[in-house]
View 1 (cartoon, one colour):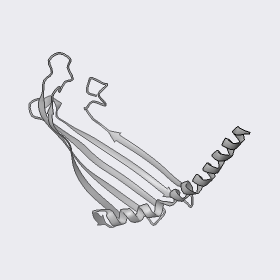
View 2: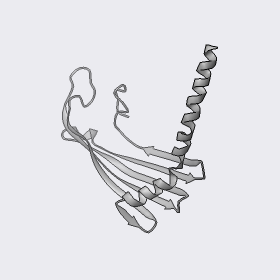
View 3: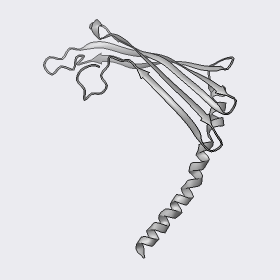
View 4: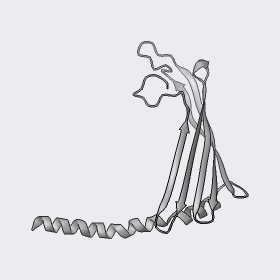
Length: 152
């Protein structure tokens, strides 16, 4: 008896949540309108927004991640990028982001690098379904995370 009550309660919650999930799937044409409104530049079918981000600025107290005698150096990382969108009517949206991390060290010139990155995404909006495909490329010399000691 008790399990039937919990099962019916779970079904009721799922039934109430389903329309909200289905409503959120109709965002395709609104996303195209947002791109057309908010892009910084517009040339023909292309909409573009350039950005530049200062990711890191300061002193790296252990440049080589050494256990013995750590060496420190002043560093900064700037990341210029541009995102280009191509909407196709209100049915599809193609997006390409190209950028690079510019890593600079004051004393250790061997650790300076230019790390290009590209990302592409294509979205096709059907009535109740959005199909998409995406791909990324990144070429970097930086550590993937703090658990890996060596630079890639």
